[in-house]
Image (cartoon, rainbow, N blue to C red; front, side, top):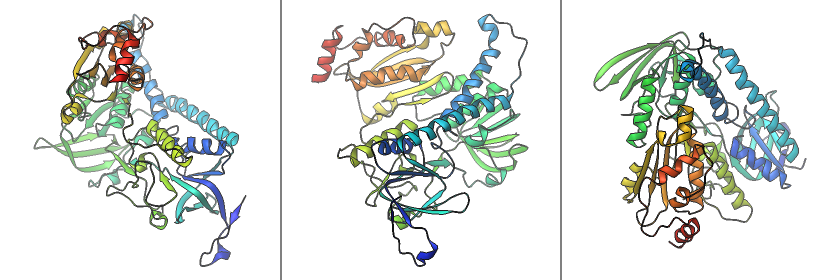
Length: 493
């Protein structure tokens, strides 16, 4: 290992500084792929993470949650068994086995990640890292050993954590976050969920399907209130039919008791004060960037007024040679965006030029049915003064959805008025995220919507529902059924 000397006040008490081409603080998905890529290209790379191999996504967030939610969906099929001609005699939910299935998946992913580190030659270091100088990180290992790493370049990817707001009694109640909720070995008797965003909605439905009584408290006037009204209406109706109580415009005043035993929430809603009693409390009211106690000031790294690392469109921080990616850099809070952040940094470190501005941000809410969107919503189009033609069909227009008895929801697209380019797509239905991807490819290829309307798509598949969708409104006069002509016209515009 190549080392370089350091000159602290008492150099004899400090280890020599280990020299790397790239040091990464935080082992999230984007930074993990960065490590494998740069190491595989012959660079000396080190990744430092406090706890998780591969960061939160494969351990405590995206993949474990979807694993748990799939178990919950299986439970929902048991409850609906007579609808499918199956007469069950009842069933029980074994949350220890649900958790075991999730842990088994996580363990396999950890092994896969470590194997990739071994194959590429990257160093993965479990420890608590912080800057002690520009581009220099001190790592405290679990046994107290100190290592000091210096990188020609440094990437910060420390992510975010669940926000615990300063509500009287909330912290003392020791509420669940998504991390603890995914580790439960029992079904909560009555789960109170603070927050009607992605985490809150997904886990609310999952726990309800396992058998919990669930109450969602959201401060906003509607669930996922930033989306179009037809989306929020479907989600609200879905929760009502599944027996999930929702209290909107709920402003939490205080919390008492302890989650897991007995907890009480006092709130104001539309001018009335209410008290809510439950056994468990889950906090899902937002995220806080992990920037505290990192020594960022010693590295010359500035923060925004919200505590995120300040970056430009190339993801460069205020300190030369230090970059930031993912949620801690204020990027949209999706793993796929963290991966694209890596691509931005990789390009800019290897002689290219890539920026974050103007990129696509597809996303999916993994309730059942799912909600997915790419591009403009109707709300956004109206706010920006962008004219559009609306294409919309109910999910039962998709024949595959009928075979699945999953006809809740709809498909919707916004198409430009002056040509047939797709401006945005929304789906609420089974595998909505997969359907969205097909439309995203058309947007990437700059295809007119008629290319999807006239495509020969395998029958019966969910993606085939795009044909009735894009046949639901007349095309512009310039459109023709020929997809090659459409492609040329779209490219020329």
